[in-house]
Image (cartoon, rainbow, N blue to C red):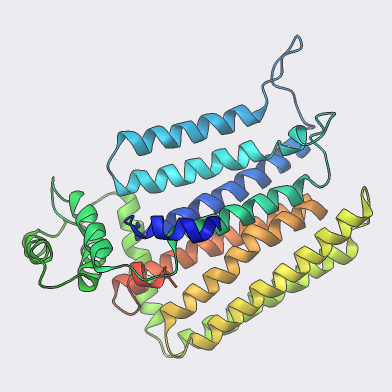
Length: 352
């Protein structure tokens, strides 16, 4: 009933083309902060911040981080600030929700074993709400134009970056070509000068990475090696999680431990299936394959690692670090495919 009432209302709102990416950053940052805090507290003996009966719970730091994210969003009209705020909000939410055990038990028990499962359920609910907000429809002509104009807003004080130009062009392709604002936007975009190469170290490293990626992927054997590497990565993930599940002794609440074991193995297999679907897509579309890889990787980050951490903090943190490196690499590769025109526009592909 609520969903049915929400959809018409959301249909009248203009969706952000980068909303899926922003939600993705938020959830990944939340899981990373949550697992990182659990590892840090366990390795340092759960220190107390404060004295004389005063304890500053890290939940407060989470609230402050989320407040900072809101202040950034309210204060600035900038896409880069949006992405920064999404990461900060995710870090804050992960820090906040880590203490859920204190608020669902009568004795304020931080070590309440089912807390991990409760946190996972909250992530699932948040993900479903995000999907409802984004919707499954492609961007309408009006939404595509609104997003293009929003990106153009960032070019009012100077030249435009090549990647931003490509994104705007793709969005304008989805809009009504006869609309006056679309005609104006295309003319304005064509007149904008290209941003000069920046001599900074970060820009230099980025250019080298881009050049290296293009050189490697231009080889005929690159996709075969990529496919083999991805399959090996997925197989290692399934094997590693299975070994953790087998070797972890049952302790605490037996039923909860069994649920955690089933969840981590099942989610790992589900993620591997999505990755396998991506391998099958490599021949037809590299960009589509990357998106399938990303879906599988997000299942591992947002679901599997939470339950692996429940069984083994060391294995959970180690697996998270590896998955985050793979996540960053995939984000880079997807961006390169879109900018090079070898894949669907970011606005269209992320609505899938």
